[in-house]
Length: 130
Image 1 (cartoon, rainbow, N blue to C red):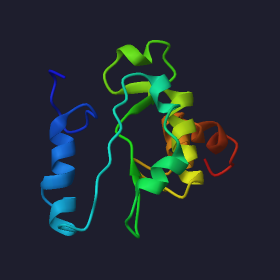
Image 2 (cartoon, one colour):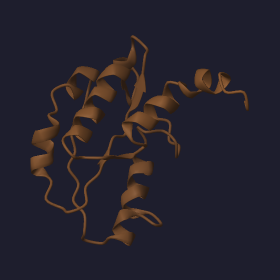
Image 3 (cartoon, rainbow, N blue to C red):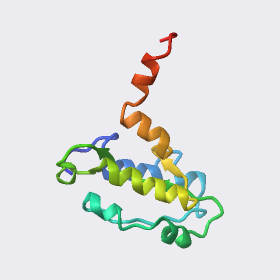
Image 4 (cartoon, rainbow, N blue to C red):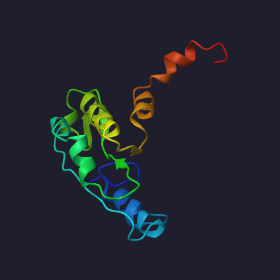
């Protein structure tokens, strides 16, 4: 990625800060965490990741799944850096959560689905206080 910014999920700077920057995992829990990664090139790759198999790899008492991808409804999701299909993204996070791996980044799958899909707006319109 040629564009570097703090909010861009394809930016190495953001990931480096999470592990080595101020208040990072390395500072808060030095030597007390392990990292497993999965290389995802296209949306369909997500469907090949088994939540149960991933859970069996994790040895720590406290676990969390961080997914640095953007779910999108675009038909060209796989051609955009960091983007994957919305269906594949949420199917994967839900498989992980069913296997006992809570989503810690960016939010639990249910909440992130509400936020990224802007699903709260129609519900709020029905409430008289809004």
